[in-house]
Image (cartoon, rainbow, N blue to C red; front, side):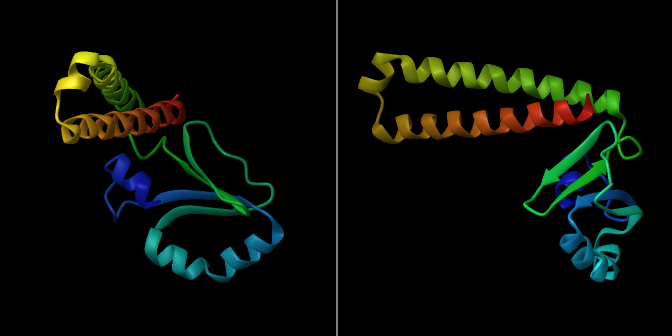
Length: 142
């Protein structure tokens, strides 16, 4: 839930709906600790159980015994967020292409200090991870 608040700039005091699809054992544990979840998350709607289904435009987090769904519809302006994420995707795709081109350049690899080459490899890895996260967000919002 903290990730959703951070990714979509949702204030800590704003209630968030939480839907948790889980098995019976996890349901009992979650319900036994509902007071803690409510204290830390301040959910508006809190649903737990085997029959909980995700809504559309939901950010989901999968664990072994449960899947947490956070509906985004009331939290963010979906269209504005989609535009923002698509622009970020385009920027990151450019950075990935630039880094790949640089690392494929034999002249760069031969002449650049090893530390600079390693720095570019780390940048490429970071950009690729960020790009995957942005693609996931776009999928959640679509």
